[in-house]
Length: 257
Image (cartoon, rainbow, N blue to C red; front, side):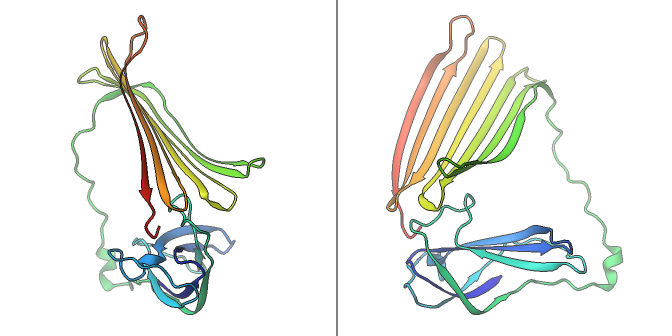
């Protein structure tokens, strides 16, 4: 738990808090983090805007985990007002001041006399793995792309799982799920998220494919969702036939986010 006394210059603002393990050589590893929309400082059921300039005491919970810090390492707490693309930025860029008196509380497990009796957990029990044959290997990538001409930075996540055949049924499955998250310089309303998926199923002369594309953008007043879905019957001899198609466009008012 990280506790701060803060003030902001906008009615809506965020805090992103990261706890890192810093080695002797300066190399750091993020251990955990916490995110807070400051309008939810007292309640998520009844958020309230900030009063610019007023001081508030806020508690930011960090994700729970177990971690051993080697002797000689240091803890580093980093605080920022955004953490894209983990959290969508507020509609206005806000400056948050952190005043003195903050604290970081970490639970500590002291050594115990019976620690020597601790044993690893047994292997997890699960159903037998599905027997499959890999027909086409997948492609995976996680890239950061910076366009110096347009000042647009993009996180690209490629998750092509290839093609495999289920031995029991002979069904061949091809799956792709790609994602892109971008923003332009420090323009908070330029952020954009896009996902594209492909699901193809084949067995004998039966071949189908479903393609989807979803794009999320925002304005100062609303979130904008554009989505597309197309379903096909695949036929190499007579051409693919689209059997279903639907488009969606939705606008969702921003309410203290």
